[in-house]
Length: 152
Image (cartoon, rainbow, N blue to C red):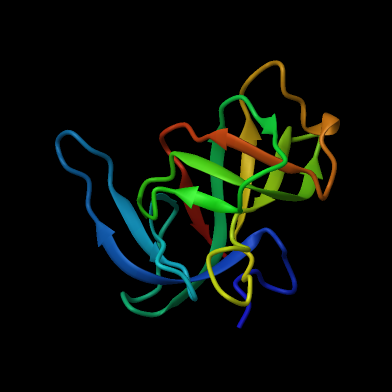
């Protein structure tokens, strides 16, 4: 089973674990379980989530990247494994210079068979421009608060 859909490599397949309503001090979020891994990602929903709890959901994970650095060591990952994404490292699988985004596969090491976990990342540091990156490049960066999920 692959987590990226064949029709759109930016989309991920996951299981909706929980919908957490907003409180007086925190925005609402959903919890996605990524197949073949221990990941329980807390993401802010964009739009309505119509999938029932415990069922498969397809959509796009987006995040805002602080300064992006090229790296040569380490694996593909999202930290922490449970909670909102704070750090991401992986291989660039798509570049959109007009939107200043890179799509990073952060999933290869989360399972024995190397399932993909694509995250569309908006570059926020003026020193980073999407056009300066190439597919296949290995990068790492901190993620700003507010990573989100939009159901397909």
